[in-house]
Length: 302
Image (tube, rainbow, N blue to C red):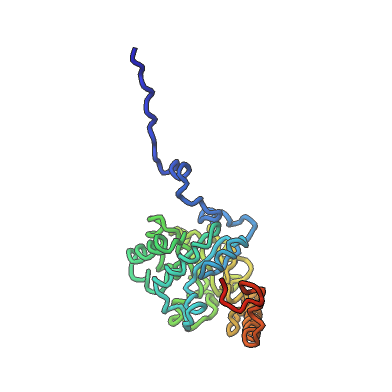
């Protein structure tokens, strides 16, 4: 009697089971835009920082920083420009990719540089897509108020999370007359409040408030359903962000009043460089401890 064969198992490759079986997709990060949103009113404020390179990003991620911004401030901190305007999309992709490779837990947000989103919603969509696809960003940041509502709505509709940014917007430095406190008058304060509400309704997962009076930041924070992240906006925001060069004392020529220096690394680095130069000049470095072979070996290292 002929035996019947057992049916061949059907192999199903679906989006949900494939990573678990084959292990080719990275696990979900600890910090997502959803978790950032849920931090609103949770009692613990979000500590955010900028980063521009792999090593710094990896250290920040290991320290538990929930949101790392690859800011177009790299134009000043890394490239030596006077402001953020010369930074290109390729610059941002390059630095964002380096940061993304160093991060396992934090949400990586990339600034959209000047003139990469101002022209149209479709321009913004194309360029934001590159920051996610080529740069490895989890989200993008866009400067501006009510005029950016359609941009944010279009990006979020297409699955690109957006961090909004109002108050002092460095890309508009020529229009606002420099790096100055914003929202000082009642009319300006009301405009910023209306902008924040509109940006949240458009889909922004959080809003950066830069250089505005603390009482106004408090009103905005209480009015919007998404977290506010302050920089020079006082203690009432849901989170804070600083440029790491400022808080580590690496930028000696510029210290805004809202920055607290947690270290003076410029001094530490200068002392280390000076000690190295002196030891090389005097022949102290390298010693036998930093050499291959025995101390009496006169020949080349093997």
